[in-house]
Image (cartoon, rainbow, N blue to C red; front, side, top):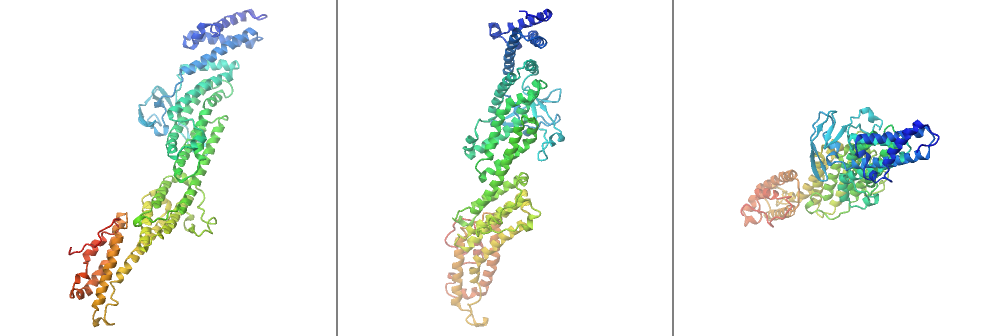
Length: 627
């Protein structure tokens, strides 16, 4: 088999190398088909690799012959099979215990506590952590490499991103297998089989990534599929996606990148990066399609907080994305992530604007029974309390003040607001929160007009504004955003509503307890008209009984406010009634059937007022001392 015209000494080396190559030609040898070289002893592996080297050297130093070209092709086909087999032999989904969200783990340095648990597939799996000799963390046989990126290493990602020390690399393949894979890749690439090597590697490793995706609950859904899901379903998927995305970027993709570097670094131009992209490009698109679909989905108020969760999660991952996808070929992934972040931010701004409009236009006209807190008030205040919890994010996203000017200037159904007093010191987000509260009050004032009883309308406003004040006071973040000045205005408004309620309720009752009209002439010494006095007591009794029957069914849900309001009523009613009874009671008691006119004692009225605002009917008649 000596190639004609070649150096005899060199051909001897070629012949022995060719024999080794042909002996492992699976197309002609059944024994070669049944066995894998790299599953045998090290001596045979080294002999085969040496044979490949000899053929390659022979071809580089002499004219390429048909025999040497054929031997090289057979060797490359064999090495490709061996490469695939090694990868497959060591390719399986990453162990559950290794798919740890680094942000939920206490693994930050060798000195920190190693025990923690994470939620995975709705179960809590506690893993025991221990150090190896290099200070790395070993989890179920996988070594987690701790990367402590310096502040300066992430500064190139832009000042908007935080520095990262969250990446955790695990050993996906044992070191001896990595050595064999590198030996094969080196020879295939040198022989011009780079594309084949990359394709085999990417195909096998992508399957492993897909299997890990399945364990993480990452589904293969198109953007259309995601947008057709009910929001309640999506909320759960968003929570899972955030956890999965952290693991994918910080553990899975980082480890895949490291594996590519271990096998391919230095073998050609950016070969390791090409293999990395071949492996993770499809999975990365699958991963980010979900966030992309959410960012362009139909906007509605209930989506705001999950969109902010997504935004915060991606923003938190950006430094890690910059590290894992740092190469030129993966620039599209970095660009896509930034674009998704931008769309999520725009969605959040749009939702806040739509929420403001929804609060203003909320159409319900049926008065809530008893003048209690309107469901809209509870919903809006709980909503903006949650907004204040996302203050740090929203202050960065909300950069313009509410549109209360020209857009609504000709709309009589829009409240006017002047931000001049707070604009200098308050961020735009605070102005939006104040604006939402203002349009909520505007809407509530419209709803109060549907009460036929003016007293109940005032009670309704008192209850609702008081609830707004209490919600602001109950949240440190919200109170800080709203500011004490505006809080004082709100407090004054609810107190004014309370005053208006008492005035409209008691003015007619107290009017019965005046002296005018009871004397027979203009002089007090001229005597008292008993008929006028009897009529006055009857009118008072009727009016107070009516107030009692109606206002016992009204509701002040806040215990302290209810008690304060009762005390305030008593402070105005009881002294007036006691004084009137003291001045004129004897005139009635000296006549016939005084119990028909002086029906109630001071204590009876006090007891009656204690039944006010309980929100349920009482007996038709007041309890009397004599009963």
